[in-house]
Amino acid sequence: MSATSAAGGTSFLEKMKAAGKTIVDSGAKTMLKTDIVFLEREIKSRKQRFGVEVYELMEQLEVDTGMSIEEKETKIRLAFDRARKDIAVVQAKIECKREEMTQLELNSEGGGGCGVNTTLADGSGISGLDATEMEHGITE
Image 1 (cartoon, helix red, strand yellow):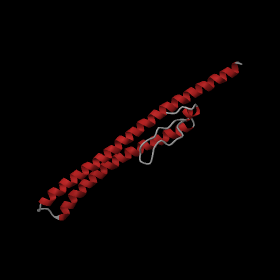
Image 2 (cartoon, helix red, strand yellow):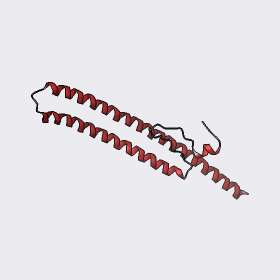
Image 3 (cartoon, one colour):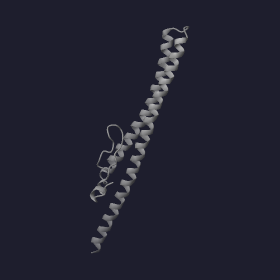
Image 4 (tube, rainbow, N blue to C red):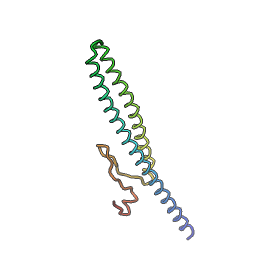
């Protein structure tokens, strides 16, 4: 009988560890999703700043008749290149966060992690229940 209770205890302990890991992974994924939302907002803000910057630049260049068209185009191109570089840096950060999320999902697949894709096509999330919650009939 002691072998059965020992096996039951180990099984229970393993289940508790798996549940704890699932909770930690879920929290980490939520944090990564939040980071991505903020980074996407940063990209949008940078694009808006670019628009204002180019508008003001074009307005100024329209008045300044001493510059050649090539010089004016160069100034506008420079503003675009700066914005593109800034956005590329933020996009790289987003890609890194997405890779971290994928890694978390791969690591948690064996441990009863969320089997539902919680990201919609528009980037918003849905509330996903993990396998343990579904097994016990827990709904939101």
